[in-house]
Image (cartoon, rainbow, N blue to C red; front, side):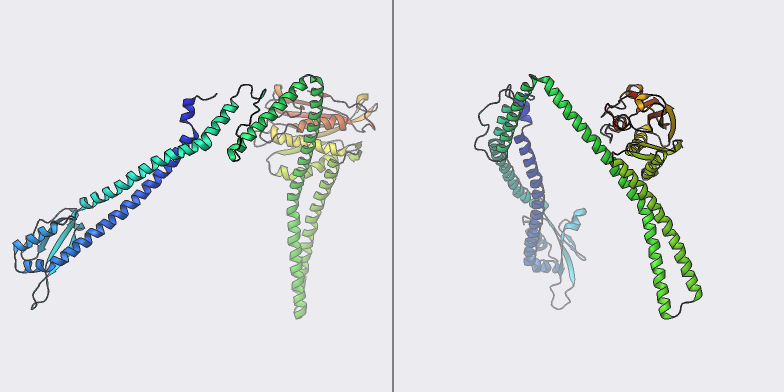
Length: 525
């Protein structure tokens, strides 16, 4: 087992669940106690003020008579009477004529004292103010009352949380802890896959834990059956390897086809984006012509059309028509190139075509992608003649070479050049076609980072890529190799120098054989 019982106890779900639960309750309790303390303090303070005011109102007239008659003893006796209240800390009287009675507070707490005005009790004179009574509420008494109340509540909450923790732990252990321990013990059974227990792990449980246990047992049973099948397969390993190899070939072919379709999809997206500009310009120009026609029609109806206005609008319509013609002409060229390339890509039929023209058509469809980069393409095409082969394969090769250079050849660089060249040569190699037949030599060279020697011999292997997990499928060069050797019946080679660039060279007959009984697969490094 990966953990000891002591370690599992410290990291158990019940412990964690209780800590989180009680922690949340504690936070909520602290907030509740803070709010309760504030409410209790305000209520106690207000109650103390009310009691003090009520008592003072009962002694106000004696205060006024004592101050009016300058009876110090009576005044001090009334002050001591107020100070005898539990919520009163200190009382003093200040008069403008006879001085102060009691001991005034001179600290900052003076502003907290309640202030009441004493008026003259004389019925003859005006009731002028004869002094002020200051009553300071005793904070300690209120604090003690609040501490007593809140302390009782806190104690009750703590006891409640402890009882809640005990109950939650017992319920959690009963419903989750013990079943999970049983599942762990089941998974720790020796030779679980080879000889799984037959008894049901948690009979009668239909909740999530029961479903989990049943799923685990079902998975173990499936693995047990798989193990039995593997043991059976071992008795006939050669047949199994041949079967798996055939399946791998099918998967590889499917992946290659998917890669081809993905490349065509990217081509469609790029051409569609490129068509937006000319079509948008044409739409804007057409709208301009419509506005001019509407304007002329309005002027005719009003019979206010002048020669100058007519000439201006005709010139405007003529210029706009030229714009439409140019933009739609560019759109027509884009669609024509894309249609031909797309048809060739999806067709495996052999036909006559101009080799250099196919390269230019393919590059035209790649322009939307190339415009987004700072890399350049140079052409040195000298195979401007009609050949009889597979244009779809040629177009696919050009696309893969350019995309491979952009993705891998210029990694870490902000500029670079891809050079495409073509030539026609004469060869007597019967393995490449008829005697003294013409060969097409096509090269793609970049001045990028190059390929290390350890990877150079693996370039054409399926699924080999240095960009695994970063968008590289490892099928681009494998597809190129397959197209050259199987479709075009030619050879492909690669040479590279680290830091100087890479060059791919393809040679294939200008006239593909009618029937190829044996596929020629040659790689030259």
